[in-house]
Structure formats: C-alpha cells, structure tokens
Amino acid sequence: MKPALLPLLLLLAVACDRSTPSTDAPVQTGAATSTQAAPTTATLAVAEAWSLPTGQGLWPRSRISCAHQTVRSCCPWIETEGDGHTLKFARYGKGGWSEAKEIARGNDWFVNWADTPHLAVTPDGALWAHWLKKSAKAPYAYDVALVRSGDEGRTWSQPVLVNDDGTPTEHGFVSLWPASRDRLGIAWLDGRNSGGGHGHGGAEGHGGGAMTLRAALFDATLKRDGEREIDTMTCDCCQTDVALGGRGPLLVYRDRTPDEIRDIAITRLQGDAWTPAHPVHADGWKMPACPVNGPAVAADGDAAIVAWYTAAGDMPALKLARSSDAGDSFAAPLTVDQGMPVQGRVDLALDADGAWMLWMREDAGVQSLHLAHYTTDLAREQQRVEVARLQGRGRATGFAQLALGDDGAYVVWTDVVDGKPRLQGQHYRLVP
Image (cartoon, rainbow, N blue to C red):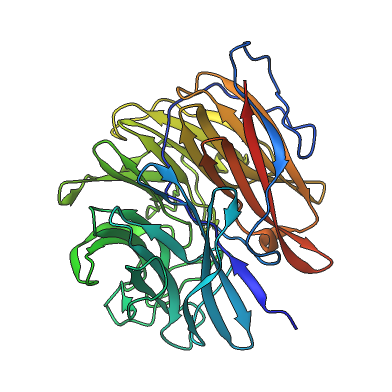
C-alpha cells in the first residue's frame, strides 16, 4: 500500500500594492481569460501543465522560498505510514525537481489540513524546517519543533522546541522569515494561557485564557533570542503570514477581541521591537468561533498588500488592501470576490509584472480555484482565471499555494480523485 502524503509548498513571497474590485466569475477552467478590457501593454498569462515531485497527497498552506533573489521552490511534504510520519522535501529549478530528501520522522506528530510544516532558507544557504509534535493525549496539545541544515538538506540538527512553556496546549500556525544572514525569525500562535480548550473550527476559551501570538529569533546553533508576546488575544486557528518589507518583517494574523470581533491585524518588527498591532481594515466581523481562514501578505520595499476572508454583515467576501508606508496605514480595501460561494483560503505573491491573488470558491457543491492578476499599484485587474474545478470538497482540498518565477506564476492545489488526495500543478507563463 502506498503511503498517504501530506505535502506543503513553500516559498518566501515578495510583495505589492492596490486595485479596483471585480466580482466577475471566471469562465473557463485552466485557461487564462480576462474579465475586463486590458490595455494593449498588459502582460497576460497562458496556462501550462506543471509536474510535481510527488503525485498524491494534500498540499496545505505554506510558503515558497526565494533565496538570493533567485526563485528556488522548496516543496516539503509529509508521508504517512501506519502511526508514523516522515517530512521530506525537494527543490525545483531549471525546469525540474531535485531528488527527495528526508528532514525528519516520528510517531508523535500532529498532522492536519490547516496547521502545516514550513521550510525556509536564510541568506547563508541554510535550510530550516518545523513540524508539530504532540505533547499530551489531548487532541490539540502539541509543540513546534525546529531543525536546521547547513549542507543543503543532507543532514539536519537535533530538533529544539520553539515554545518552551511546557504546557499541554496548542502551539502552531507558524510563519518563518530570514532575520539576518544566519538567523531565522519565527512567529506562532501560543496557547499556554488557554488551558487547552481550543480546536480547529470549534468554540474557544472553555475554562481557560486566550490564544496569544509570540515571536522569537534563532541563530545557527538554534539558540533562542528576543522572544516576545506580540498579542495577548488572537483567533485560535487562523494561519499567520509574514513578508519582508523595506523596514522589517510584516506579520499578519486574525485578531480577536473580548466581543468576538475577528478582523485582520498587522505588526512590523522594527529593530528589536514589534510595533503595536493594528487592523488592516475595521471589518467588524463578529464570529463566535475560529473560521480557520488566515490572511496573506506580500511586500516590496515600503509597499505592502494584504488579502483576507471576512463574513462581516453575513456576506462572505475577499478583501485586498494596499499600504505605501510599510504597513503603518492601508487604503480602503478592494472587494475581489463576494457571495456565499466564497471560501477564502487566500494566497498572495508579487513581482515586477504585478500582484497575484489565489483563492477558493464552492458553488452548487463544486469547489473551484481562482487566480487574479493586478497591476503593482492594484489600480487595475489585468486578468482573472478559473484555475480548476475540483472533485474534492470541504477541508479535503486544503490550502492551494502560489509561487512566482521569472516566467510567471506557479499554482499547486489538492484535489480528491476516486477518494484519494491528488496534487495538481499549473504554470501561468507570461506573454506580451
């Protein structure tokens, strides 16, 4: 019997700017089509097949990593056999994938569709990876384990725990970034104050405190430094995301107030301190439980964009907002898509040709994946594509991923075919 696979695409995306709303539904599966007139100078994308390093599995949310300004996609995935799991990865470059290498294995891991391992690269060439390790028998009691490789993944360090509180509570939804030549920054949701009363998509805070957001730095010897509690009350199981801006890393997450308002917040690491977190936009979404639907961020210099899902006013919608001052303030958001079919699960990327946004819909029982391409200032939508219509439903399709190369955008998603998860890939090659 072949092992079940839970792959996760990874890249450190770069960012972008601002745009006009378009809610036209995509009209053609897999083909690049424009939903509004574009000027003759617009750069359009043509869909091409993209092979992946492994065929079957789930590709949950993660990022792709850009090292030294050269895109090298690192694809990590989890193979499940019996009660154990193995974390592996491969690199994409020059039109093909490298041989798969093993990062770690264990029989005490926490593996699910939303809270997934990540892989990152620091400027010294070192690889860093994390996974989730069970700390007790409770369903959501697990810690974040971190390892480093200085020889391109041939060997790996012994794991260290990112969180050292020793409580049998939830720790996860990690974001990684290169903090310096040989240091890694890591942010995570931390349930040490919660008493363990949390779950992915359920009610929170039963008899305990709130989920918090924390961050720390790790050097090449995996020594911890600069740990901070950034927010004392956050949504419990929405993914965090980070992008490197001109004035420091920008970290986005879903906040939570005592009145159960769950809007998207942003903070920036400036020197040794995090700036006070503030809303990207005051949606005012009151939600009694975690929607498991985190934001995405991309940045280029002082320009930054953030995308997110909200259901404020009982209307599901996808928003996209731009900052020109490194996240200190944002223009009014665009509504990229709205209506009951909108599921969210967003991803973002930016290059010199514009901003790209990826998201999921489910209409009349059919899930579909969509990609929009904007100018870098978000002033115009250049193209909108229905990437695929899926056979899978609900959580089984995970979180699709978006990466950029010199020749366009790369999209990876999970479908379920004949009851088995199957990875699919598509390349959108830019043409004049």
